[in-house]
Length: 478
Image (cartoon, rainbow, N blue to C red):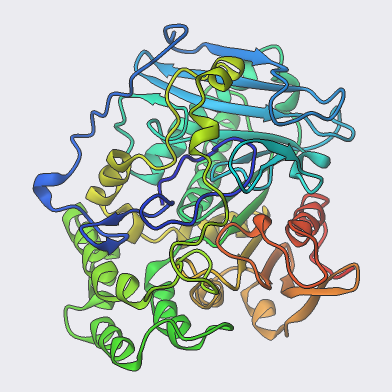
């Protein structure tokens, strides 16, 4: 799940298990390397061109002409140097409409919602009319260090450490005269997949930092956090892992495996010392070894075998699904790298970074308390997912949502699903309660904005959701 966190503001991620967001380790989807194979946490990325990092500096290329080709729309890309050996890549696209007043959002996982899409031959990009920068200023960030175009010594191995890195990057970014004007804008954190951890952790960390700035115990620029959006996110494993069992046998498309495999996974969940017990122990002051062991066991006994031969990001088709197309050829082109100021060879998934996080068991540590904190703080929050995704499926996500204990939970529990229509066409189901919303999108895989549905253009349902939430509204059909 530790993919290039920003990619480029383009299309979606390849849906191959071996080359996608969630690596297959020793034959197990989402597995944990054996102890002698784990990373050293000192993964040096090779810098191929350009400047040397200077801590606290921002290195910027403006208006490269890549991806966003709408006349007059500003873009900038480059690096924020956190340290001499830690540089985080960003790509910023101003809003196509009213950029001087539009809100600012950050995105950390893939680029399927950005200004351009890659074609099916992976040779070129075309303008995306459903881009989220239509009415928002969008800042894509490759994090942790070591993924995407970011480079350096990859020591970040938990979501909390990642939150500190992103906060530091934003402080550098806002300190630049070109971007300081965005510091006071309404700010949204949007993310997906491992973002079920990143989103709540980052948002809660930002709120704490804002409070510390107000009390003058920390210096910095406060971030005007108003929105948190999480798509197909793994947030609370103990409530979400049973969803793999349920989804594998009764999803909207077809069973993924035969009944004996289901039965084996059910036993692995409930038996003494099984998956549920291991996740519980991890979150009851468990050690890194406890939590890493929980991930290894649960993914080996439940997540991986239940996937069958289907694509884990889009179950209607067999693995490997050629859609979305690969980005490797396009993003590793040295000419493109020079134009946008990229100084490291792009890679979708850094196995070493994945191994570092797996070694701490970060995945199994619940981010639900942080999510509850953020919702209760009044940050407008939307949880959304595509119903064709297995790897973080909607059945598990809805169980997580139902387990939340927030100021809106009792009201949410009383709501019935309503039809989410896009220009009259059914596109999904939703619920609202106060400033909290949930949306299930029909026909969408893991990267919701990359898909279409009957009568609903590609990306239209995701854009409608995004626009409504960023406007301060609840979800509604159109």
